[in-house]
Image 1 (cartoon, rainbow, N blue to C red):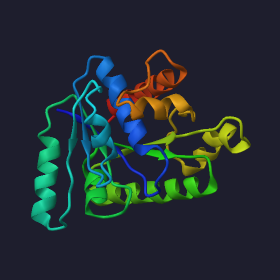
Image 2: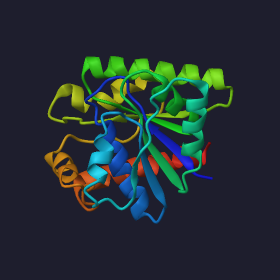
Image 3: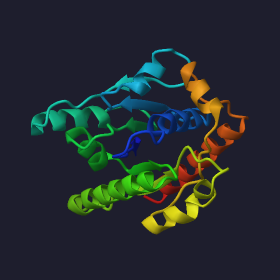
Image 4: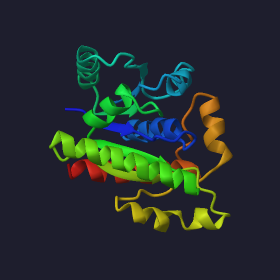
Length: 215
């Protein structure tokens, strides 16, 4: 059965789609069958996927109605995806699709920058995921906070991992702000595996696999 990974954040601009695509690329390079579902109406993941250079399919999978039947059909579509890992790029705004992603996934990745507003947004998202977990009564989703777009030249960037420990959830290895990340996606590709950014996404993928093994 596929492991379901959701990228969720109530705050925009934290690298949600970037992490989804590069994480999927690392998992695919490791020999896993991976699918990315773009549930965000902004469609950024699908737009990159249309360029045809990623080693996995990106499928638009929107939930635009709030009726129970629509949510059930959306959920069934996710669960029927044939892959070892399904990575879901959740919409940034709260709504039926955001809630459905959080409710269905095994692991919620919450990207967060180093600014005060980013950390407030991450705390809000963590709280929402915890409430879904409690309401579902199934002990899932697990949470992994991902420091994203980290500028190590700043004090907040250097201290971000320690700061995020205050959220009392596991914190993944940080993803550094580098031009190569944006440049690669502009060309429809994941970052080169041998690059420093590629190594950071490899470390993130290892942390994700470890969390999923314990679920």
